[in-house]
Length: 97
Length: 220
Image: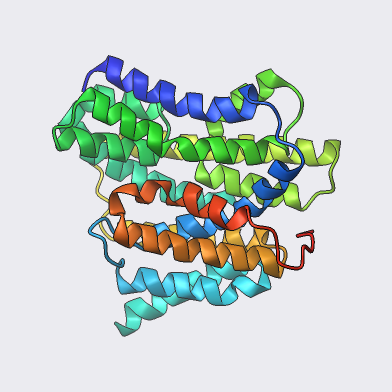
């Protein structure tokens, strides 16, 4: 791993951020509608990925129960409630399992 | 709201610093966190280095990993102001976490200058918090800090954080249903094509977002 290669990695990473935010034209119409729908889908997808290991398999039970707790609280659409429910799920799993 | 995310990022920074130091040295480890500022990219890079991958393979993988920034950037772009320079500077702070907090804050506001101001401020504040946490964590990891016990708590924080963000942004039943479908598609991709799982957010997000509702009712 050379400093030049690391600089290239950095350039690709920032370039991908910069391209959509400051270089490409602002999306409009149908594209904007699709992009609005994408937001919760991306979050749900990232949450799912964080529950699956590289092997692939599922993560440890306390992490799964933390996610389950947050999922149970999700219909209330409260950030704090989701965090508390997730923490409760994690603590319960640690105590019981 | 950003404090739990920053705390978890700091722990993963420690893990990154500890894992990267023997592979690429303490100086390049710290420099990588300063100039890349992406946990997914940096962990993947050192994983490939450890596996003996060449420069072309590393760059191709990094490019694929960063495709999601194009989608997130296009989404967040609509909530930001007209100044290209300001957007270029804010682009540095585009992370999964800062993106989430910014979209939640923007969606609470009516369209207009107030919404733009809130979105830009949220992206800046959460981005700076996360950047500071990532750098501090990396430095501690290089110095040999141990995080036994904290690692699993941090691992639990990420799904909880993103479930909470999904819940906040899924303002209608249609959006919630699409989010659940995206989660299902992601699970299928992760288990059947694990090497491509980094692209699952982009693929599943687009797959569920493009079709219109059967009754063609607007989402908002």
